[in-house]
Length: 624
Image 1 (cartoon, rainbow, N blue to C red):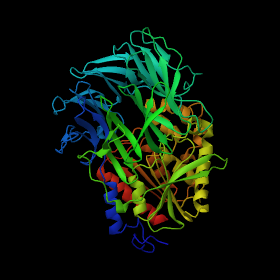
Image 2 (cartoon, rainbow, N blue to C red; image 1 turned 90 degrees about the vertical axis):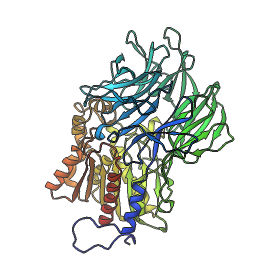
Image 3 (tube, rainbow, N blue to C red; image 1 turned 60 degrees about the horizontal axis):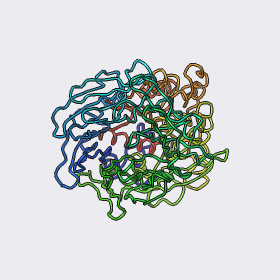
Image 4 (cartoon, helix red, strand yellow; image 1 turned 60 degrees about the vertical axis):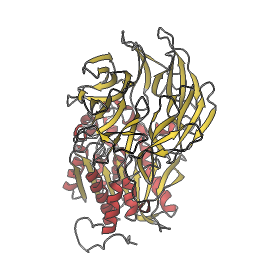
């Protein structure tokens, strides 16, 4: 049954069916909803710096926590801001800028009053700056990749003079912490899935693993920080356990004055949740950010034994970012939910007061246009438990036109967060199912590694199992399913369309890989080097990469596909969509190509988000 919210099709007409005026208005409001993220509290705790796209592109703003005065915009009109950090003395703000959508970010600094703006790193168009943090007043440490190889150096930048000092090199070093005397450096290095934290002697350049490979958490550790007294290193690492219980926790490692590392002690661990972040409070307790079935759980723990002191309620289910006040009494949380774009909230940690939204936040979209998803579990062909979030339009009680939406990564995780494309599809009358197939994060190390290299074929089968579940459960209408995905999810969509030509009636991709061989050749060198463990070696495993690349099998694709891409994308180069479209056109296949000018791997421009959401909804309305 056709959606009542779409215009009637004209028999024999070419081109996409236009959405009705009501649906177009709904999609425009949903896709143009502004958000705010990446909070950074001032040292005094009275002001907040953050990124917001209320102007149509991500900008840097500052606002007072308790005064309802208009926020101040500190970034330039053409600067696409990625993140921000406030210096410990309050004199500077450091922020990353993505020039014209490129992943090759620049590091800018500016005074809180808007003066003194300077580009201090990344002015070379081939260099990429990765955020680090302030080590002391006026000194910011970051990682910089030159663009001519896979490595990134740890670099100390002087905000006043712009001078650089290389602290460490050798491998891709993602800085996580610097000791107070700047003698020691902690950095994450290694390929995807096997990253580990190293302790670097700045004077000699010597690197040592903080956790031995055979120690708990030694196989994969994500970040390390020096303890307040400099006598320990805190490491967030994947801890061993049964599949599904091999979760990320916190390990504390003793550190002597001369840099000798002791045996690690597990402080925080839960078999049912991943530790996504943590902070040590001045009173010696640990603020821990756990993810349980995709939902954020905020807890205070005793550092000595990990005992739970208090659980802190949150008004929305997902907290991607946060900034803790210097006295540890509260934090400013970046919160989001299925009906709530990212916004900033003040969250007291005393267990008495309630969270309150900052007054400077953008307006939320009309809740009557939105629906909340429900978590469903099902099983793959080999018995592995999978899960996904189901969005159902109001009034739909049976099989419906359904779009299966695959997340990126593949280490990403589908969570009950704001998704303008999913909500736009629901507003157009579609059911949306967003699964976490094997390879997704948030379910333990064994699950996230279950699609590495030759095992990727098993993750492809999860797509078919997902469709079988939706049809058997009476959720999806057979023959009226579509596949959609971003980045790796776009690749997985193309894989499904070529492997099972009758599984989906149509597909739509955004920034997806079409050929893993050309992806390795065209992406940034550091990204290529990091992706070998995920997909395979571009030389030694070339035949395998060809076999699992959609371009090799495009002759099997019969369903119409919409290929979307930002034309400044250098993560998954725009040529990945262009070459697939050209080949499909040469074969007479039904495909369209939508290139979004000035956009990179993530679409951030307000007008482009609206255009993308409308085109995807209209595409599936035409073909489903």
